[in-house]
Amino acid sequence: MSSRNTHRRLDDELAAAAAAYQASTIIPHCPQCSNSCCRLDPLVLELEWKQVRTLWRIEEARAAFDRRLASGNGPQEIRAGNGLYYAHGKPCPAFNEAGGSCSVYGEPVKPAGCSDFPVYEDGGSIVADLRCEAVDREALVAWIGQAVGQGFRVVSHADEEFPFLVTLSLKKAKVREIRNRA
Ligand code: SF4
Ligand code: SF4
Image (cartoon, rainbow, N blue to C red; front, side, top):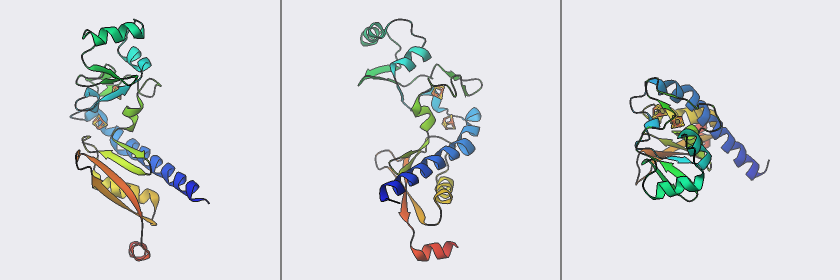
């Protein structure tokens, strides 16, 4: 198998492991989370126009909405930029505070960033956001190690500027390490 195919397969395995961690550990905790990411504080939600229009129930055309936003009369939590919109500082309108649930769960309008948060694969590594109280760094390292097998060891390091962002990288395990684990 070519090295590109091997990398792609490893990336796929990491993405599958991240999704499985979310399903087994994160999502079950969401209904009782004490600081839901859906309150969008401190998280920022990146949105396309269609998502803004649907979630905020905007009835006017995009150009009119953009003018309103630029004049300061739009939703205060939304900023426009680079053809996208960014919501921050107020709960997402799809968030059901009482039940701790999302009213668009599983629907195409749900932003990709919501599904990725707090653990996702990125360019052959796993990124974890420790601002989510359900993430356990050591348990996640063990989970990823289990998923990729004995041929690798998982190394985690925190971002210097944003230490709540942790990257888990794979290093090829030395033969001695593999023997010690066997
Ligand atoms: S912060 Fe984590 S546990 Fe809380 S609602 Fe978001 S994903 Fe779920
Ligand atoms: S769309 Fe759903 S998951 Fe995403 S922030 Fe809003 S309520 Fe939360």
